[in-house]
Amino acid sequence: MTPPGPSSEDAREHLWNAAHEFLKAMRALVDAADEFVEDQRDRPKPDGDPSRVQRIDIDDAGAS
Image (cartoon, rainbow, N blue to C red):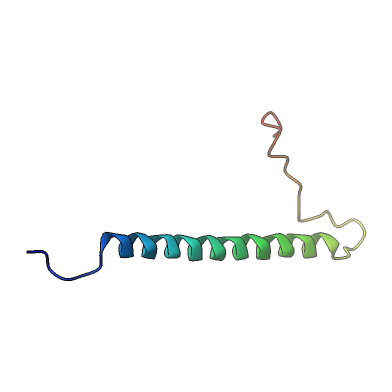
């Protein structure tokens, strides 16, 4: 006799919903970080003050 409880289908649906919510949260985090970086790049800086944001080319594996 199987005890009453959530079925395997319910558990799978719950897992998919949780994964979807997690991905939405990560997308919001990445979008916020991207907006922050763009705001930092757009800020006027005093002359002679080096930029605090440096571009990193992740496609060029040989760059250091």
